[in-house]
Length: 196
Image (cartoon, rainbow, N blue to C red; front, side, top):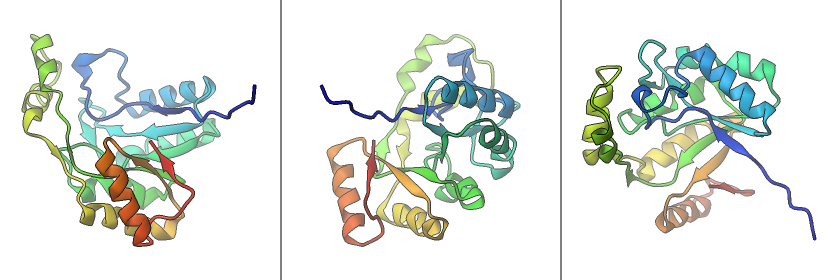
C-alpha cells in the first residue's frame, strides 16, 4: 500500500469558544505558547494561531498580544506559524489583519467568503459566565455575519503579497471554492493551493 504524507494543523485557540466553555482553552500568551509547543511536539506541522486578551480571554487582533507569544513559539518549535486573518466575527478586517501585516508570517488563514457563524444555542448550557463579554458574544451570535467580501479578501491578499505569505484557504461551502477560483482568475492567488 502506498504511503501518503499527512499534514497536521492545530488551531490552538480559535475565536468562537469562550473561557466558560472550557477550562482547557488557552487564554494568556504563555498558555497559547505552551499549547502550541505541545501540539508541535505531538506532531502538528502547522500552528493556526489566534490571540486573546490575557485578562479575560476575549478574542483580539492586537499585534502587541501576538508579540507576547509568537517569539516563544518560533524559538521552541519548527512548526509553520499560521496566523488567522479571520480573527473574530466582531472584528473589522483591519483588526483581523493587523498582526499578520506586522509579523509577515509564512502562512495565514483566509476565509473565502462571508457566512453565518452562530453558536447561540450553546448559551443555554451555562447559568453563569466567567467574564461579562461572553454571554452577549454567544447569545447575539444568531445575528453574526462573518464578513469576508470580495473586497475584504482582495485587501487581505494584497496586504500580504510582498511578504511571501502562503494562505490556508478556508472553504466552508461550495461557493467558497468558486470564490477561490475567482481570485485565481484575477491572478491574486497562485498555485500550489492549500485548501481546508
